[in-house]
Length: 212
Image 1 (cartoon, rainbow, N blue to C red):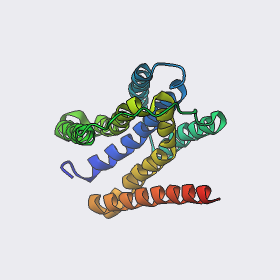
Image 2 (cartoon, rainbow, N blue to C red):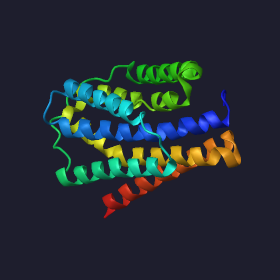
Image 3 (cartoon, rainbow, N blue to C red):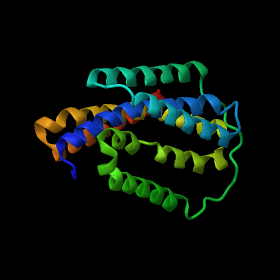
Image 4 (tube, one colour):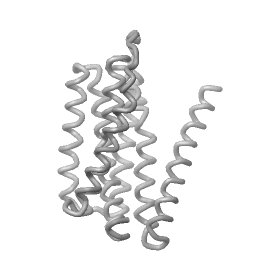
């Protein structure tokens, strides 16, 4: 809203492109979790996100090519997960949750968002769009879960995020398309509704499967 509808629309499209890199991050972490030490696995997944983002920024993207990119990455990820199955988790370690875990995660995410917003004028819409969806929330969640659940179980959590993150990409594309005809505020509201409906549908499917 600081920069106007054209800037936000361009940023949303670039964020949707970067969302494919997040899919690669999740796939890489899920695949490597049973082969590498947990922290090395996380570092490798972050490196893959950064490299994929740098490569993707070199191309010119449209709504159609961005949608195809996300469907390809997340479709591949879901197929790999279904074929390989979920890794058997080891025994859950009885570690007491530290009081600062959730507040620290919230502070990290808020600080990152503030940094992106503060630098958005200098970064431009393309870099801002990519930076805005750097998976700081997923990384902080993995960092919190690894000591308690171990690598394989945390990898299961990561791969379960593939379907929701595909919906996140859909949300960004809806926002990009809706900004020009209905304005930034209404487009954000519509995108939020899409995200909530997508997540609700996934939860309903999970509940029905569990009941069946």
